[in-house]
Amino acid sequence: MDPLTIGTLALVALFVLLVATVPIGVAMGLCGLVGIAMIIGWNAAFALFGTTVTETIVTYDLSIIPLFVLMGAVASRSGLSGELYHAFYAWFGARRGGLALSTIASCGAFSAICGSSVATAATMTRVAVPEMKRFAYADSLSTASVAAGGIIGILIPPSVVMVLYGVLTQTSIGDLFIAGLIPGLLTIAGFMLVVSIITRRNPQIGPAGEATPFAEKLTALGRTWPILLLFVLIIGGIYLGVFTPTEASGVGAVGAIAIAALRRKLSRKRLVAALRETLITTTMIFVVLIGAVTLNNLIVFSGIAGGLSGFISALALPPMVTMAIILLIYLVLGCFLDALAMILLTVPIFFPIVASLGFDPVWFGIIVVMVVELGLITPPIGMNIFVIKGMMPSVPLGAIYRGVIPFVLAQIVLIVIVFLLPDLVTWLPDTARALR
Image 1 (cartoon, rainbow, N blue to C red):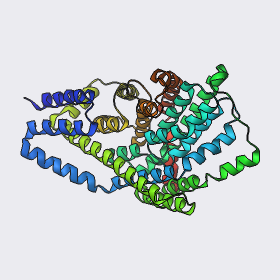
Image 2 (cartoon, rainbow, N blue to C red):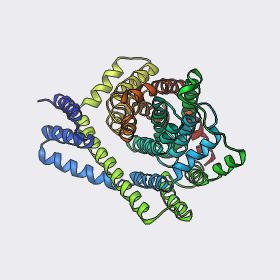
Image 3 (cartoon, helix red, strand yellow):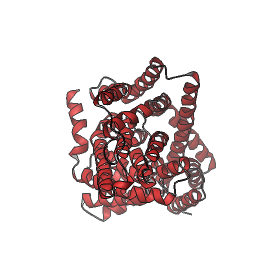
Image 4 (cartoon, one colour):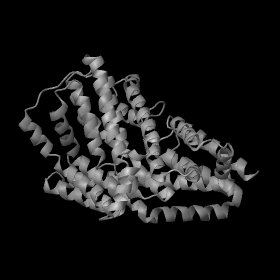
């Protein structure tokens, strides 16, 4: 059997295993290992797999992942997510749809110290949905605002997905972090606009909450200083070249622990829980990463990557049309794969094509992250939706899906805007490089 056929059959087997609910990392690793063994033999395949595991674990750039995960876990368990929500509630709560507006704004702010969309959605579900139920918000709006707000978690830096993209493509992680700021703020603004439009058309689904005196608004805002401090330390340090993204992750993790301890919000039990969450999340990410690298080795050995690249190049389409086709493929895959799987499976295939067309790798990275975000709230998978459904079993799944439709449409519009206006992505990194 020729290598191309073996590679194709391995990809078919991968999707069969995914449908059978085999964990994504295990499925990719198994298909990749068996496929490589059929091409180069079992001894060589096991030797390559061992090298893959070792090199992945000891890669310096990947040490950023557990440190940022730890920062988010500590921040979540020290009550910062609740204080964020109540601060934004003080400012927006008295408006029509104000609690949903507060949810999206606090999701965006929490993303600055979390880096995970699923973690952001889960954390804000516990904080925001009960409050929206108290004010008789429609289930469709309350759950959808958390699901949509949660996807900002991988766009506002720090972002685990950006780290993986940077490692896979040898693109500056610092540039990616900085480049995500403007699209992230646009996403927050766009989703808040969606809430305003929805509640204007149907005020009953998002009634106004209680008004807050101005003095209390300032007090509530003042309690969010730890998140602002961490964000300025991390992104400001990277922007000015004071330290690398990996060093920034260490500063962020230590800073989060120090702030939580100073505020007496970090008991031994909470610290142990944060460390356990960090261990579990990091292990999951590395298992998926090792499986993806193994599968990507098969794609290289089988000639699938080169063949696909040659096929697309032979079409001789305009570069922007080629990019549009790639993004459409991402939109379809987003309906079936989670964020990590999409990045790890597709970037090694599509990035050489995009680079050969002369597109900026930072711009392409942000576009990919935005499309991957969309997959977190689109059926039939919609990881954020299932997380919220698991935490709110009384809410019908159909109600959540109906609620996210306007946010899906808004995200598509935002992707088109960033696609047509690359300067929205590249301006901040270019400015940062000029200052260094």
